[in-house]
Image 1 (tube, helix red, strand yellow):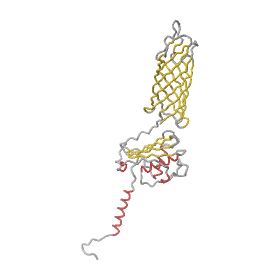
Image 2 (cartoon, helix red, strand yellow; image 1 turned 90 degrees about the vertical axis):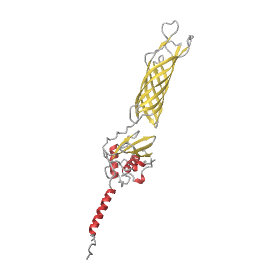
Image 3 (cartoon, helix red, strand yellow; image 1 turned 45 degrees about the vertical axis):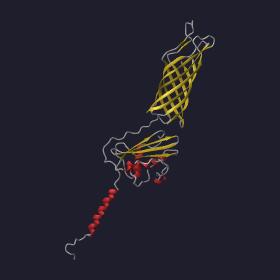
Image 4 (cartoon, helix red, strand yellow; image 1 turned 60 degrees about the vertical axis):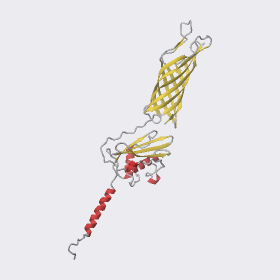
Length: 353
């Protein structure tokens, strides 16, 4: 019996309602973070690392779901390279406006890419969902082990902490174009000692040596400076000899090449001095004569070890003014500069990044 006006409680109904509320709350808490876009690029000497599709597949396996979408508001850019024996992966998280939400840098000194690859996959997965239960890799990972290392065994890394902006709620998804792939830039400053033979710079053929240096100013483009010395050479009349010292300034273009071979071309303007040596006749106007020329030089540079490289090329000169060296009373000049000259060379040097 119940007193009039006293409410009656139905226990089964309350239990069902509470269970439904808890299920809804749990589903809200367990909702997956928003999808992201991923760009993975292989930089200098990192061609042995896997391509982007492989990294996507491994991140998906780690998270137990596919977190990628072409129209996702957030994006992750990752670049891996191998410089001076150190593997380095740089990972940046960006919002839909391209502003950085955080960055992480990983390094490894292992012999191959497998260690930095496993660490990068793990870091990308945690950047997508910090609260995810990371799954082991079972499908042919790049590492030598049967599965990628667990969280606590990731390779040592230097980490740049994400900015506070990364804790803000993600913006509502909005369609946007996919980010451009990160291109590899092989342009590097260099200095090269050159030596070889010259033809046309002086009478006959002569040995020559030089020094060349370049500094990058844009992707593929460099400003270059050169110095050249040519040993004294005699014309048909053995009473005379001529030598050359000159300096050049110009620009070089080096298109993207392979990890071991770099090709390119330089164009420049030269200014220097041709000096004459007289052995028997008394000179009436001693001193050097101006040498000026334009040049074009295709070359190929091969990597030897670390920053050391070997280079071969040919410098083609066109004098802007052809000098004639004469003797008073003689009908023909002792020697006149030809309309073109060549300097074929080989050299060794270093490049810097």
